[in-house]
Length: 322
Image (cartoon, rainbow, N blue to C red):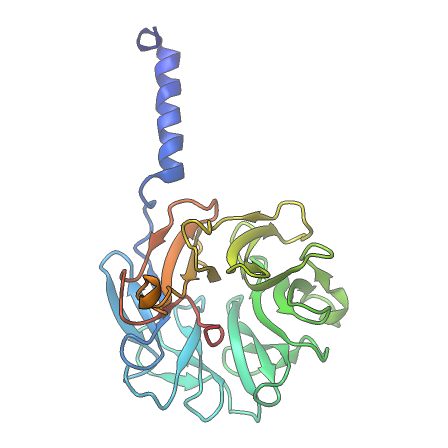
């Protein structure tokens, strides 16, 4: 019998551990401070969530209810500071908030442009999207976190946005509609003209809309994909691109109203925005958005923000809810 065989007992123990990894409790290390965007205080603001203690702290603004401006699209810098987007200066610009969350200052003097979608690039740079005027197509830029060394990466008339940097800091993955529907692209930062190195990562001929990539520590890319008539879900692919290796990691049976805005947390988990929930007349409590956490393998989906809350929570709020 198995109970009398040491090898069999070890086999059963190993099987039990593997099953626990697939569907058991969330792994340790989830006590880190998460950044989210929420209108829980009355206006759209950035908050830092202590996942273990369940405490939310306002980041980059002294007031949560001042609706004269909005803060969104946060990204953590390597020194603990937070880069975010705010329109408090009359246009969308990049701001830097200190690790203690007290206030935020413009990253650089405000040009006659609109900035969005910032992401950390190494220790001392930020990559972001900029439009010359509100509503115009955007290009990608890199700038030092002290506001110096502005470099333009793309010049195509199409809209380029939602960049993320690969772990080695040598490539950028972003979204562009230069070939029609939004697709994922990769370019090399080492080239004299980075735009000439562009490679499309989305499968050729795909009838889908891709967006919001997140560059993960292991080299994979998490991104949002939507097909006609269906809410978007989260997919995973390699930085090499193509159809091979693309797999869906969120389940429409679990998140029937869609998922988006993946954010890499550095520990093998991904922060995502779910929703919106349907309105009350359709049996829901919305339309509301909520934040969830999931592993790269598509397991251990957990809700970060309160169930049934009367406010919206987003992983980044890259754009107005659609």
